[in-house]
Image (cartoon, rainbow, N blue to C red):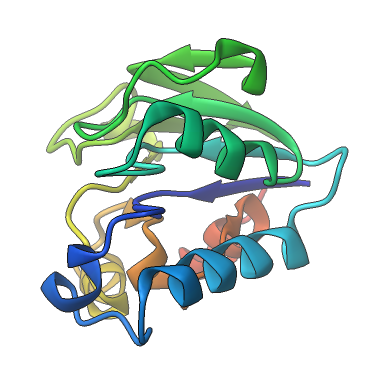
Length: 172
């Protein structure tokens, strides 16, 4: 299975109040996000992390938290990401396109107004904005195939490629 997530901000105390996250402290937040992630992403799954894995912690601590995340991880760099241990990832890039059963999907930390094949049914996945689910619903209502995979928009869980395809009502 293929999954996507973004903006976990592991270790970042201030994000709890800044984004009104439902956690008492950073330890609870880290534990919940890692538990939720590992509840759906298994060892042989592929997960694209669209940036901002951790923030305001030492890179060694970030690497330890990342090592606890299941799956074959690809990182699309966000504005808060550091030089994590590259051995923790299959690949680290700024932008990437993938295809799933013929469906083109563009991946980047930042949302794009136009992306490869955007006028031909391609989907754009991003993070960065810390939206709630209303953003994704509004995009769908407006016929925009752009989806925020950030934790706040997805109940603090990764979202699967199949969930996104179904969300937009795309028949493959």
